[in-house]
Amino acid sequence: MRETRTPGARTASRLSRLATVLALTASALLPGAGAGHAVPAQDPLPDIPDYQAALDAVKSAATLNAVCRFLGAPLPQGGSETPQTIPDKAEPCEGMPTFTIKDPLAFNEITPGFVAGTAQPVAVEAIRLTYLVSSLSTTVNDRQATVVLAPTQGGGWHLAAVREGDGDVVHAAKAGVGTLVFTEPQVRGWYELRLITVKPLNDQAREALGGRSSVSLSEYQKLVKARYADKLPGSDYDARGMSSGYGTAGRAEDTTSSTPLLVGGSGTALVLAGGAFLLFRRRRAGACRTGS
Image 1 (cartoon, rainbow, N blue to C red):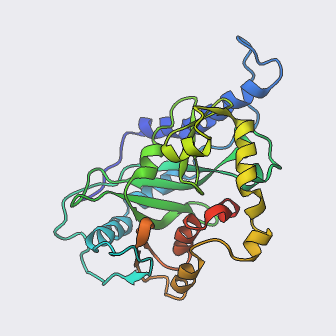
Image 2: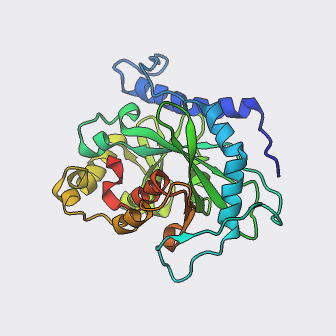
């Protein structure tokens, strides 16, 4: 069950995608950047920082054990979102089929400034890297899981959660040369950005675009601004606590940071209490998610 690294060429290719699509986007928007006169991008968003640290995190024994504990616990029944403590086990992976954890992919989201309308409708201001996600090399007991890494203060990455299913990873993997994949987490919509054209990748995104097959990035900004600009942190909506999931998060924060919890409902996840549980709360927090 020891992890093995994939060839460095695959990692380098993955890291270059974000810079490539941002460069192409900037070229398309600059004056005079017509056919045969491409203009290099200025200050594109960086590649995934500290990627080796991310690889080390997903390949670590601690992450492997966390995944095994998640897969070894029965899923909560009845849609309950009350955290359940997972009993400790000296060898969490004992008796499980052999599996590995794939290299992490970028999990990109729309930015608060883009939603508020204060940022320009260009990729460098509209999209940001928020997490990294990895899935398993194979299903385990007919289950798949997603490993979520969050940035560590001061640099690097750490395990934030293990979630049921691999939908986020499947969509994140659709990014290619010249394209950027991102999510509108409030509606679970996934999109592809090529130059300044936004295309939906799932049913939620198609519905959010009103059934259109594509829109410009500026048109998309108008849509999300209308949906969420009045629900960002500091708004009356936020002050009234209208987001969902806050009660559950508050209970989880009272636990010690070493206590693994299994949360049920539509977002079944292993969370490591404290800061890691905030990830689940924010995923459940409706329109206020972009402000985190």
